[in-house]
Length: 365
Image (tube, rainbow, N blue to C red; front, side):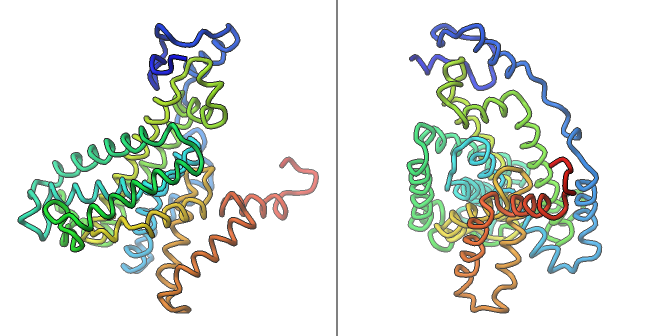
């Protein structure tokens, strides 16, 4: 089968050399390609408006510590984990390299922008450095995707883990570009139109805007023809290829989109910490992003943000009950409990509770 001559990810024309399909499979293919994505507000319910109002008003009643350390940090980690949820939950590709992509964006921001390492940073304005950092991270995401999309299961995990570990050691041992173990210090958020995004409230709303943008982008893509085809490839790649879809191109395109989301999260994470070092992209953080995605649930774009809230709360307050060195034991116990009792994460646990206790007997479930 000449898979390389198949259609592009979003194309509609069947090129020469594509698999011959029957009228029935043509109908399925055309139905997917001609489907119209409903507006993103079509699925909004009252509970969504309540949650939106809460997060918008959160800085008004929360302390600066809770606004910055809990709120902003949860939004950033949720955004990075959202890229993994998109790949794993809807594309069937569980990647451990999403924090690596975020780290690439962070390092590129520090290299092309301003930092405390004036001899290594170019000192360009943020509005130039940020797009460059995001584009480079997306290219890296495409490369990781191209390398791993022809594998499945444990092999995809191992390839993406190997890429993440290789990038960690590259940053750790290279001093001419990445400044070794010291990394880049004093990489601060900019001041735009008189708004200093280093302030807790301003940075929270910046993180919230990016998180909402990523959430609605994923929601829109999942209902678009590309997203529908990607979910079909997740369920049965051979059948999707048989009806004329280029499976590899769709998967690589999904990695590019996930790379964009992770890159935005990586830029925010550098501004949040004010620095980036090899520890920011170490093996522990590669695993932590997976834990966050699984905790929240990988069947809905809101899941990673719920998982991030739990993770950040445990990371922040568990040391009051346990030694700091035992945090991994605590988060591992929570992760194990969620996986055992609710494979769909917190959202699956809530669905079980709602079905069992809140749905009237004889009612529609």
